[in-house]
Image (cartoon, rainbow, N blue to C red; front, side):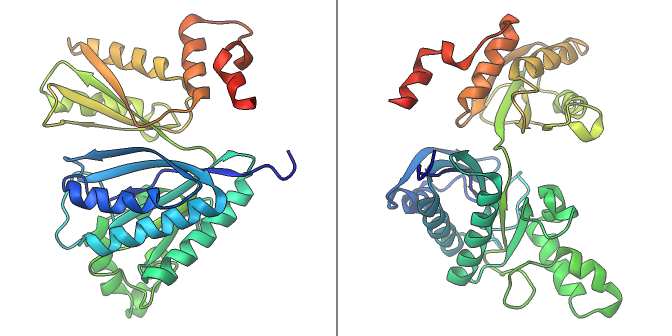
Amino acid sequence: MKNAKQYVLAVPNFSEGRRQDIIDAVTAEVTKVEGVNLVSVEPEADFNRTVVTMIGERDAIKTALVNMGAKAAELIDMREQKGSHPRIGAEDTLPIFPFKNITLEECTALAEEIGKEFFEKTHVPVIFCGENARTEDRKAYAFVRKGQYEGLRQLLIDTKDDPARKAEYDARKPDYSDDGLLSDTAGATIVSCEATGLTAYNIFLGTEDVSIAKTIAKAMRGPSGGFSSIKAVGIKFPEHPGVVVSMNMFDCINTPIPRLFEFCKREAARFGVAVTGSELVGPIKLESVIAAFSYSLCLENFRDEQILETHLMDL
């Protein structure tokens, strides 16, 4: 629709999940921006990380992300931060995704603006990932985060002025940085655009043996022979009984959530372990819910228009 407002989904992560005053101060920067809806704030103490979900108009999302990232960089010291989730910076990620009336190409251009403005405001180094990656390797968060804050910081120091290690330095150096290194206190921030956002999903197992969860996670994730759109780890949440297979799902349409749940149940049964429950972490798109519903009931020729609430969006 010509001249229709463009809406962007953003799911930034910052490296604090324990101190509520810091979490509140960082997320308050989002609520100050008109044209942005703060959908959810999901802190996780063991990860020491908070996932924020927001939807908003193009320019409003940019302002919210830059201001939020600046506040995280101001309040979080990576020299002191510890947690079980990989990270390289205080405002670890600023990822955006097309949501409504905006193309992937337009969102990719917006991510470039966000990275540039965030660096100009904070001087925190920026590394572009996903559709904005400068190399094929940098499309993957795992490559960018290899070594985490401590390892990447030291690697850049060791290789920057060593001609014999120039290729190694060039492969890992920030795209924006004052000195080609990480910030001692704020690390670096990953800025990216991708076609679809992830859905975080946990499946709980009735055992305290974390090795079982790790074995199942290995069977589920793409690189080790599982589902190509799944990243999974087996971990223990101290606040929850049992262990958990924790997943990031990048395609809930072609790999519906019930399919993963059933697969996990079968794998757990091999060890004589029951699945005790599951949870979604943060919001989920309606189309993913519809895909799960259709898959579970083996529906034929089901259409989105058959859900009455979908018609409210056109009122």
